[in-house]
Length: 226
Figure 1 (cartoon, rainbow, N blue to C red):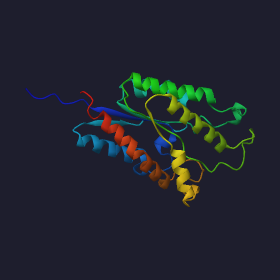
Figure 2 (figure 1 turned 90 degrees about the horizontal axis):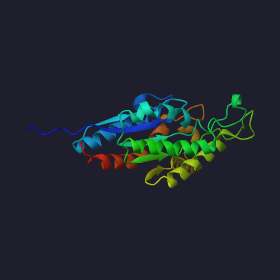
Figure 3 (figure 1 turned 45 degrees about the vertical axis):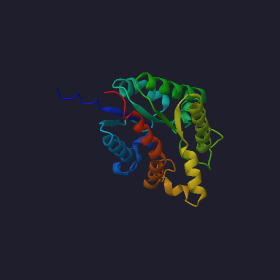
Figure 4 (figure 1 turned 180 degrees about the horizontal axis):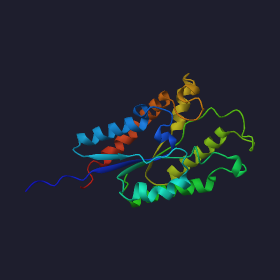
């Protein structure tokens, strides 16, 4: 009797434009290149994998939770990488200076994403902080602080959530970028002209930082039952 083929594994990237790779050719983005590495890693273990990336430019954790039922829960995931915060921390004039998602709601939303991912099959859960931006000089016209100060604040929330949620693997991207800039690499060279989104060089740094924990997660799910 022929041996039953093991089921296809599912590894999800769930985030905003940093996972999408806004403004950079797709083949240069960390997500596309890392997906290929995940596939190769699991192929070496005799497993097939679908790397999902239902990330959306401009998304916040609030909006992402609304679509998580379809994008993540419907098919389940064996592992997931979550990256949000750059939009949650933003302050629109139409919100009268309030962040798009409050600090308390941001923390709660991340916790709920982690819980839901685990309820629908995720073993390894990876969480990233966000890189620094060059939006650190002029304050908002409608709020007496810079965009970057909010980014740093929300990065602290991400670190706290990772510590509180047992078993979450944190990659502190902000710390990785800080080491790069301390070594003499100009931050502006790692970003697009908007001072926020990643340049191709910025994607290279993400790829280098994320490859070890992501491939370790892929190795963990390789022996999952089919």
